[in-house]
Image (cartoon, rainbow, N blue to C red):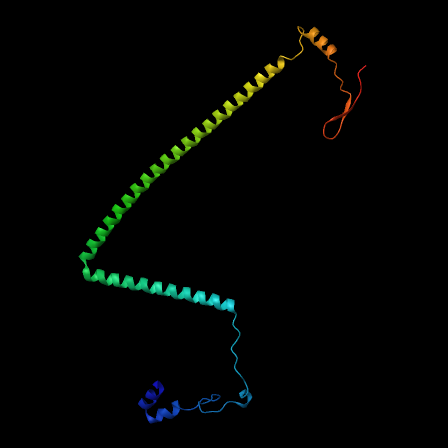
Amino acid sequence: FFMTNILTSLPVSLRAVLVETVRGRKSRNDPIAKSKEGRIKTPPPVDPVEMVVLKERYTEYQLILSALRLDFKEEVLRRKYEEETGSLAEERARKEAEEHRALMDWNREENQRMLQLRIQMEKEEAERKEFEAALEREQKQQEFIRMKEEELLRLQEEAKHFITMENLDQRIEEALDNPKNYNFAIDKEGRITKQTVLK
């Protein structure tokens, strides 16, 4: 359509030059070449993995371009608005800066308060753990002392049956009066099966 308008607007002498056919080119009405009559066009094979990657990259590309367009559009609109409003824009920018400064100060104070609170909580937690550790050490020490006292009492009770110089004669007489024979055999259950007779 565009070429038709150009041709009709040109002089007749130039139209013949422009409509001359190019050598080696086919017109729309030419038939299919004999060498390509039976040819069936098959699309090239597509790798599914590559297709997924390309689709993801194209989606990411579109997102980036749309973000850039929105950013540029916003910048253009902001400049246009600032040029139209003039002093109002400066006043609003000053108020926004003051509000931002106030919010930053509040944020800084809140961070400091949270830091102090966290330090206090960590200190209390450390004191609690130290108290629990001291209590556990105290319990272990008390248990150790109790075990040593029981062992001491047991040794004192066993010491009553020890042979000393004072009761040596008495123990010798008791051993002679009550002889014990340790020459015996036992079975698997621990019963005495055979024992020699003392002479």
